Image (cartoon, rainbow, N blue to C red; front, side):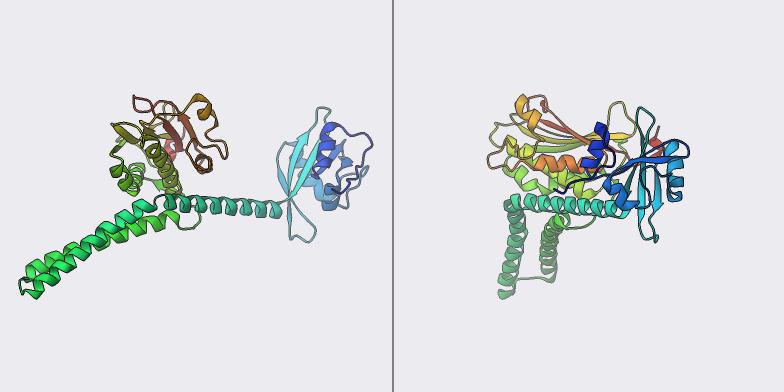
Length: 358
């Protein structure tokens, strides 16, 4: 690590921290403001400002805004870059300015969002991989039906026992099965396609039903009673449909996995209502009648790489929470399911109706 040159012999802890972190911070005192201390990073961005000098005119507007406790911006020489200026004041009245390159910050934010999107895409692909058996079953049914219809048509044609009306009816059934298979593929494609988040008003009951449709074969195989329960006057929420559905799929599959070794009845419910005590938030719950989790596991379930499932990677719930927080919402867990143990995951999301603002 390169050595940092400090411009004052006796630094207080805050100034030492600024210097050690290589932040562009300068301290000003008096009227007119005089620069009394700066970090090397500050000197690189403002080479014309030296300790002991009156603040250069380029900082006049930023200092005036800082005196009012406001942030501001400052163009660098040449006008091609802009510095963001954030003020702070110490207990002894010393005014601090922290400078940061707006372009660099925006590039870092863009990289962070791109990394998040790649992580979400990987999670969606992993979810589809885990549902491979279900997808194969869903596609095998309509393809098998089409094959049977075609064989039946061929047999009747060979015997000259096929009427036009019967042929049209059979072809209609085959077309319906082909459309069903296409729908399965389209559902999977829309679930995993890589794209930028699209925030829009979401119909939560419809999204919940689509989620159960994605899992219908697993639900039928494990003989689970699955339902959606939503208040009639539930407002839409703001969010990205694919991301929110990803959360619901992950939580519902966790419930199905937990109930697989449990005796009947097995119940899975996705419900929605207004969050109690708030007109601006909607609460979604995903509840199961599995064995539940211990108090120790409940406290760690959102920690990276912690999983109660054999072979689990321990990243799914962390990704779910990240998605919900990206939507300015909350995700939490309680240890009681539908009256007989199990788990409940709660999701709070902001409504899309501006008139709900207090």
